Image (cartoon, rainbow, N blue to C red; front, top):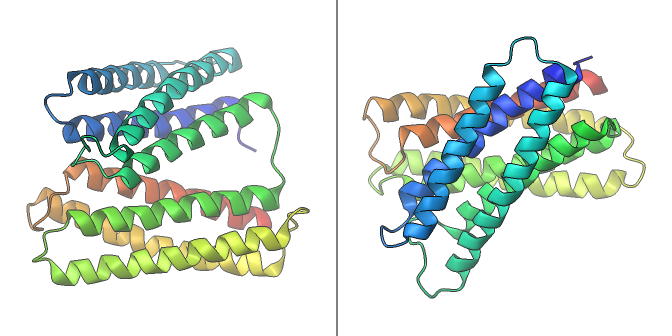
Length: 260
């Protein structure tokens, strides 16, 4: 069983970096005239870098050390959600849309921030989710994230990359189908959230699909780094979505191990 300290370290090391990346993506998509939005994106990038550095410099951290780090991350990310909501609402008002930041992209970033907070708050409470509820909740959340990634990639590829676009659209359709199936299954096993055989099979199918998507993302990241794909996809974004697929796979394999 993973200790509180180790789990806290792993969660923060992953999510603080993800939150830092979000600030970089937001900053790069903001119009120059919005100095207020730009200033806040810089603030959050630096704040997450400082906290991430603090985590990685801890030598033999205690439970109290990690509890304090968790609380700092929760407080910072709650403020971050307010900022992301402000950007999303600004976009949806149609007064002067942030043309380089899709509303779904902003909602996606905010959804991940909520996930980070919820994960830390559950860890801080010392409570454990029922295995069936944990399994289906993780799958519902991450499958949607994978589907979103595919949609963002399609819109950032140059139209000349027709074969790649077709491949990514297939991933988008696949993960949309898996998402709706996961929602159906969650309803079926509620409220007891017992592990039934179909959850076992579904988890295996999601692992297989996510491994294929991860492999695609890894190859695409390498090609983007070598300037062999015509796109508007920054190398950091390609690496970012690959890390998230890797994290999801790790979660899935832990779930599969627990339910077998």
